[in-house]
Length: 354
Image: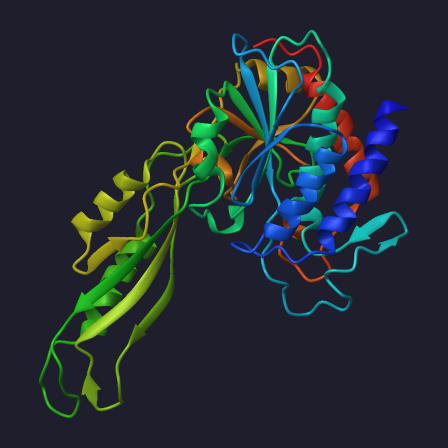
């Protein structure tokens, strides 16, 4: 009955959150709603910008601490929605709405699990629940802005749509801007140095470059040139050409290591937008992972990025819903997935010894 009541309460919360626009950097109103949800239960909250933190009632600084984290920001609605993306409609056991799958269902299921353990006097660990902002853009005002406030974290459970499978590894992300330099000239004469051709040579090398270290869970590091731009008019040899490289690293390479290899093998000037979103991994032997294995939860390597990349402590990504539904028109979550998510989170935590 306790779990059933928690399910009803957090389903109501999720529907309220869906009805509120919460694009990255503008999540103040959903933060208000989450804050009010806990305050109604007379639970002390800490708020940092649009990030909400709550701790279990008998928090003991001498015990290890588990972070329960998910985000309440969303991307903007994709083209093609045939219903109002901010209308939390339920039809045939399915809840529709922007952010329902990514990551509202996990956000509220983790809240339910937190509430289940909140006032238990004897726990072998502390629990901190953090509903955070700017995950969709890995923003500076999201999880990274509250790391000091969280204190020492032993392990985190990160709620993202994984069909309640355990993502024990996650690919990193690095975006690189390339700039090929040439010399302008008239296209009708043998003049100039064509920057576009220089860029194409580099792009061809990148296309054929396959980093040798293959991960058991994440496969190979993947590089893709996704944008290119050059030239001002048809009869002028372009003196510069820009292009963009999308790099998805496995845990066997740091972003810096891949960048160094690219620099050494290309002519263009390369600039990484950031090195901070490295691949992450939690060991199979970790007690939290072993607890999941004992519950017969499947584990895998995730190709998608989350706030795990910004966490300087072990973390396990697991949550309600399916990654393929994220950012799509008609985003939805099955109500049964939320119920199962709550139960699985509670089972993962119940009796866990760190």
